Image (cartoon, rainbow, N blue to C red; front, side):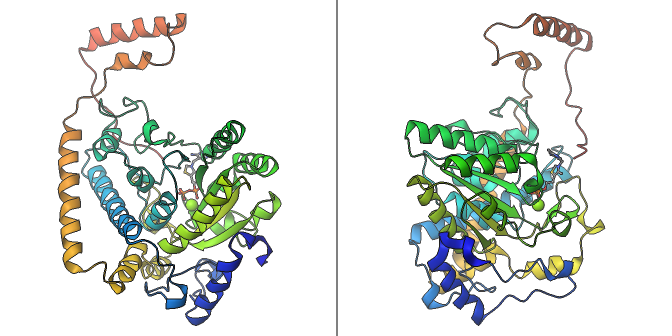
Length: 406
Ligand SMILES: Cc1ncc(C[n+]2csc(CCOP(=O)(O)OP(=O)(O)O)c2C)c(N)n1
Ligand SMILES: [Mg+2]
């Protein structure tokens, strides 16, 4: 079963040493024990300690930047959920527990690389420098949103930092990423395209199409599969008859590795190797990040109706932020005082951005007709006239979005 992990051959050896010492035991009865897996490449023990031989000794700046970004992502998610519960925004999708995947992968990229995220990756936008204010304006769908309120909430789009628009139809971003990767290959720009999808996304035709094409043409693409064990309420055991997503890589002719998705160091190292490999022209790779969706699917979901509480408790022990903090503390890079300062700073930054974003007026409905055609088509001209008439009749448009069915 290890043959497909050529990508990380050396590191797989050290992984075996690490896991032999302190194996993460799958707990019996929890979804057949298939969730807390032992086969993942990991650097950190479950409690955040790292055996000295396995310590990758990354630069202090990268480690601290990753930690700060993971904390910011958590704070952003908490604020997003709170705003929705307070009825101030209509919808939110949190990424609780998945912070190491977003940050650990984003930290390996260059500015020129392309990112095709799913809807559960605010941390990648934040790592690459997206503004809190602009992201929050998207949640309100107002005038400050870079998509002018035309997208759903959490469907951010930041072209300047090469963050492609979030797509709701799952896995569609994979083929878009392969297109960008092929463009890079043909024009020899050495840009890598990284794309993200969930365990549910791997059952989509677009997953198959994207990986087939990338494998055949050796596209400089990296596929990050966030296996958080659920696709809304559908557990991983119903997603595939296979045991692991990483095994699918063999069929597409690319190397793959399963990584402990709650271990920021392991995610970083595995992704770095895949990105470097793609940049050298050696083709695509697949990385299965094994994790757990600690929150609801979205603000419209209640996971207590289908998820075993014991499973949640088991994963709580492996919180990716706590693990990285323990590691940083062991290196004397972090302490309680620094944590307090950081949390205060994040709170203040978010409060300021929320206040500013909430005050922003809604987009002008007439904006709907801008930015696509240089000259409106006859149908759009007709629709615009109808809308103008409506506006005259009603006076103004209110934001009537109260509930999202997703
Ligand atoms: C093509 C398509 N089919 C169905 C849906 C409805 N849907 C939205 S999210 C989701 C689950 C996706 O699960 P997964 O890929 O594991 O990602 P996660 O939500 O766990 O991050 C589904 C089925 C959709 N958005 N697009
Ligand atoms: Mg999932």
